View (cartoon, rainbow, N blue to C red):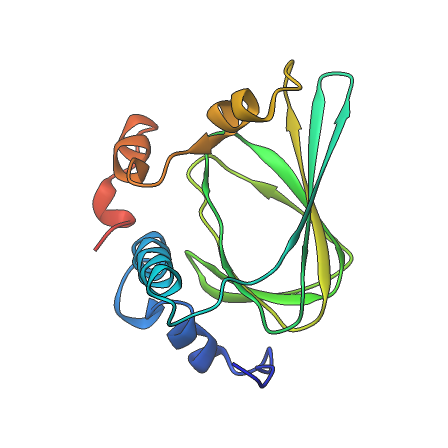
Length: 167
C-alpha cells in the first residue's frame, strides 16, 4: 500500500484490518494474521520492517516497538495484564469496540486475551511493560504471549465465552 490511510476513514480501516464489519475483532485479527502470513510466505507480500528493542530492569521487561507510516501489524495475544505506552506517532487499532484512533503520547492498560490489529498513520514508537523475574526472551514470551493457534483455548481458560471473540 503506497498511500497512508486517514485515521478518520474508519470503515476502510475496519475493512483493511480484517473485515471487522463481519466478525468479532479477535476472529478478524486471527483471520488477517493467517492471510498475511500466507501472502508473505508465497512472496505476494513483503514483510514490514519494524524495529524491536528489549530493555530489562529490576523485575521488569520493556519491549520497544517501532513501525513506519503505512505499516499494518497483527500483535500476538497477551496472557497478562500490562501497560502499553504510545510514545510517538499516530495509529488506528481494531478493538472490541471497533476502530480506535490513538495519538501519542498515550498510555493504555492491556488486559489478558488482547490481540491487536494496528495500522500506523505516522512513524510510531510504543512500549509494553511487563512484570517478570526473567531476562530470557524465550521464557518471557512463554509468560506473556499466547502461541498462535492457541487463542481460543486461552480465552476459554480465562472465562470468556468464545462466541464473544470468534465468529
